[in-house]
Image (tube, rainbow, N blue to C red):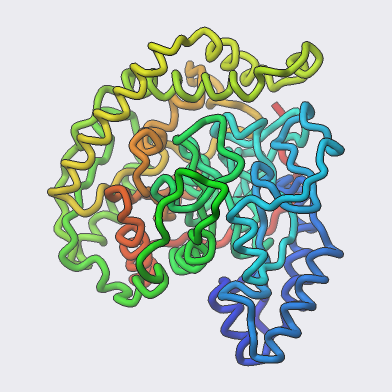
Length: 480
């Protein structure tokens, strides 16, 4: 029989409808997988066996009556421990957030929509403290390892979610992305992730990082991401900045399959104007782009008219570090002493920015947004590598020996599109020389989430996207 942990959400619900697979059996298998991989990769803050099985039994009864609650009824889901989940602590990777702070009576909007649709919540996944960096380790929950090599990082800040999906502990996960936090770990762990247009998925409470922060699906393929986005993009009155719901189903927008690339005007920027990319990563991405052209896309190699990396990074730091300072503004001396040292450093930097510095950063992102808006008048999609490297040592903010200081120095392809609020996805497109996954990034104009998903789905349908499943994991992740 097929291992239920290898099935996508769409395949699971098809089997539920046919009556030849039980939501309870699937939940049991997913929980067993989560428990089996936890010692190796440390993807979970906690799992909730009693709650998950109770939800699965309710889903099984609904499917037996032919009355599922929604398109993900009975499907195992994990939630990054940044998002509120009713009945469980949301500690955000920080010892400064006590488990008893509660009373934890609210769901975040995306969690609420999944609950209404009958999803089975397996547990919460790991995050660095307050999601501040592009790898996943924290003083509270330790280091999260890569499914392909646990001594390497899973990326971050949604590293636990990426590892869980890659290893079969639920096909769907909710992540957050303020500078690449679903796309970085997706690229490192060989899964799919989408940062939707800002406001497409309602968010509550509002992020201290402001309009940089997006909620996005992390899945095994683009079809499951569309399915999940159809659920979580529904409105919620608590988010004043949300967009109107999509005009139609994003799942229906994938109907063209591999033909979805034909005639698309694609700009391929292999270095986004100057990033250093490892040769094996560059080769894997270029090979995928050549296949994309073979499927009918009109590919032009060109760079978008963005500012220098120094200018973009400084603008991002002004906004990101200020947000970190805001998160920790009311912490007492004991709480500050317990912070991740890197987070403590950026909060000090953030507190030194003034209002004019912040507004100057906003000016940079507005100019970037205009430039990209005009760029997408000519091109439907921009394609870049997601990451310039494959996963490096777990427990380090930057690759050891690199001479780099902050995570933003090795993520040149991700944070610019948080500044512009555009939809951007990471699609696995091969393995590097070290056998670790490589990701290709698809970017479209604001509001064109369907275009990103359609192109990504076409790559999966044509066999261009995807990487071999990770081997069985057995070794624990190493610390710093």
